[in-house]
Image (cartoon, rainbow, N blue to C red; front, side, top):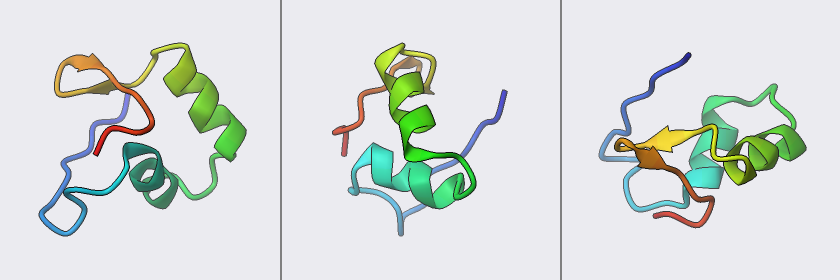
Length: 52
């Protein structure tokens, strides 16, 4: 499992766009699938792509 800290520069942007920048080799379809299946956690809760 990977763990990232969101810095002040990244704060306020959509979570899916942040993930694309942090994981550039991961296909978009994979990221959205992991978000859809709720396999990605943000602040202890299941993440959603539009979270800012």
